[in-house]
Image 1 (cartoon, one colour):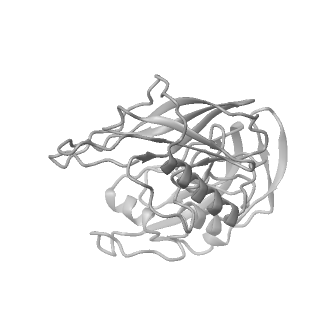
Image 2: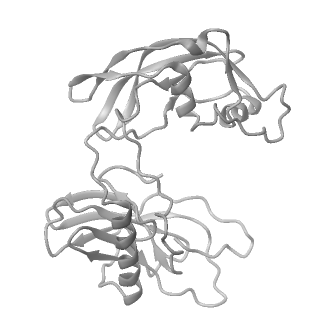
Image 3: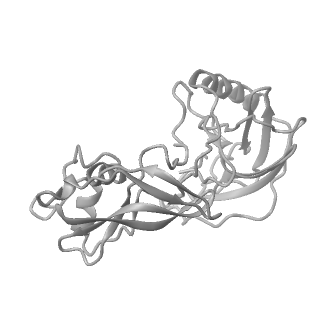
Length: 294
């Protein structure tokens, strides 16, 4: 989404999703050119394959929350250490329980790699604390207990093994998911694929794929303060479908607030979607049904 800051430099808060369907039109030459660039980048990266595993709709940590800002900064920046012996807690296998009642054994990871994954690798490479003294920018894990917790996935609420961490000075525990990599998938990152040029002015991303039925796609298109003329487009190729939106140029002297809203659109394909991935025209990333962008 592209927009111009408001004159006072203050954008508005995000708005909720709109329920009014966007108009759909044939793609402009500029949109079709962008779709071809995106398709080439996707093919170079390898056509995405829909995940067969449940997709995790939360982070790897459960119950994050802190009593002080210093604790929050220490966690975010990876300044977490273990009492003697706590980080050596290991586990072999556990059980994944799905919403439909199905269960399956899963490999687990020890408490240190589970925590490092929850911190996005920051435990192994802590960053300098921002405005907090070194004495206050640290957390100490004094105990770790293997138990279970519920998480939200694309296949419903699942029960997964977790490490429940007791942290000195924190009034509650924090749990980190203990299943091995690959058991639960995470939503696809939304940074642009390598090699894609900057998106042209007035071109908008597809931020969600809500439903697929034969030749019909229900999607969300990212809008903003100047999205009154937002229109949805689709470019249908043999191996993928590229979706996004456009707005007309903003007239000179008009300032757009930096708000954000997802606008729904219903698109009709010439052929059933089948196994073709649905690709965002801005990032070149696939959208899976029910999986939000992040």
